[in-house]
Image (cartoon, rainbow, N blue to C red; front, side, top):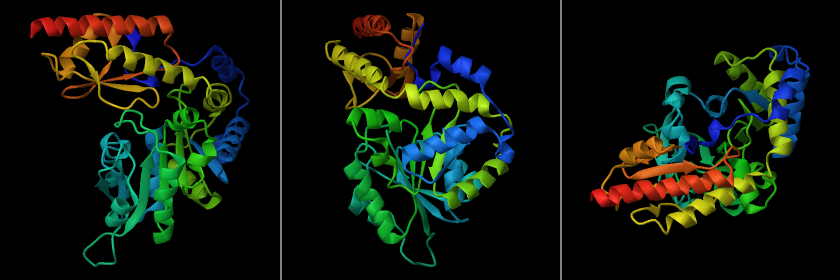
Length: 346
């Protein structure tokens, strides 16, 4: 079975498995796990921050950031298709007692005028803007990249108004590699940043949040409150360190495979590519076929390819390290066969 559902399905490498077995561990709640401490120090330096904290997932990292930056009753500005809004179970409202303020962006980017218009003025009737969030790369916009110039435009606005910023950088390394820029150019301007170790980088579990020392001290307390305090977590941190030191540059292969799929789809009758393919995500538009996205995905599965629906007429494909060129070509053949089947049904 060829799995194009997500880069979360990646398996740890053999070196990661060995590192997990051999990891030197301690009690991380006491901050005594040397492998965790090493990973956190390394990641903080990598992202241009004072300190970092290992958390269980990107969602937990994002929630800790909102809890750490905001007060009860605040409002959080985010792009309306953001992961924080769509895929985190309304946790910012359930846990932090804040409400989202969603703004329609351009491929995930909120321009200066729109961002300023969303910031609340002093008014007894309105919540205070407590945080501005950005997602890079942007999942629902098909892995779209937010450039350093766009990043600066947004964070400059926030600084002018004295509002903290948080970057959901679950796939930030994809943006860094695709642009050919140092990761710090994309992360340093933000008050806090979250990166995921278990997507394209291939670690089995974990994310990192980073910021200044005061923020991370507060984040550590919130992690404990959320039940995220871990003990001998070096077995998680060890493969995470390998992910950051050995798995970043190979993301280029995933981007190449995504471009290969996108180019092939241009030649498949009834299918079209619904996004600008910046990184490792391809959105397929099935509007011209006599089927819904779910029906198309069901037939792909029967033919040996797993994919996800991303709307009534949209199918999402994500490339990752566990897919070979041969498997990519087989997946394209399957796309062609399924599209042909539905075209004949029309």
